[in-house]
Amino acid sequence: MKKKILITGASGLLGRALVELFLEKDFFVLAQYHQNKPPGNKNCKWLRADFSTLKGIEDFLQENASLFKECRCLINNYGPITYKDTTKLQAADFEHDFFHNVSTAVEITRFFIENSALEAVVNTGFEFAGIIKPYKKILSYAAAKNALLLITRSFAEQYKNIRFHMVSPPTLVGAAVQLPRGRKISPADAAREIYAALLS
Image 1 (tube, rainbow, N blue to C red):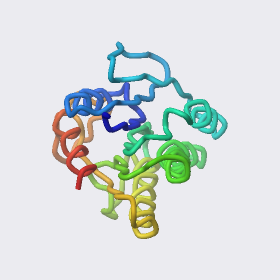
Image 2: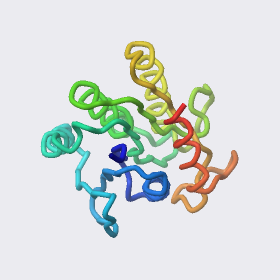
Image 3: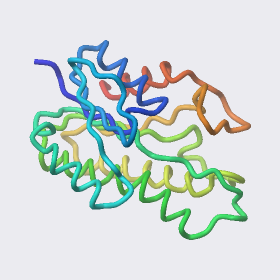
Image 4: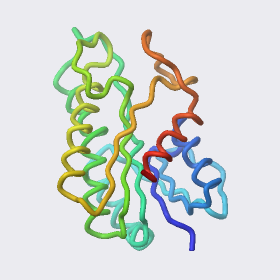
């Protein structure tokens, strides 16, 4: 039987590369998308979800609970970026980025811990996760991803029977937001890093 994995944010740039790689590695992929459903594959089931509210997350989990029961792996790849001058950020921007990048991952992970055969989780970060530095354009996003890193490490300590990792790739070639500093990496290379982390 093929090992089953859920990938959130699967229709995005990195998500598509992850779906392709895990299909190549003989997984059965449950792939979450929001609006534009990609082409099908006999070993990939696309699942529509709107993660803009807690109810949307809960509905997604309950509606697909039977599919998730035998899921062994989870990649929390969903997480939009707010690109705005730090001087123009408001509380709503921090709430938005924390909810989408942290609360969504935590809610899905908790459900999988309680209701599936979960063995491994990878959360996606960004290049500077864990580095404390000032940000001019992505402060609310960076704060959320650093919170997700803290949660990843804390869950790893609490749930010893599950492998938790956070992979923080550089800016992806082709991404809508290109950071002026730091390295760039292809989506396929980033997907391979995540695959390696999931198995380690």
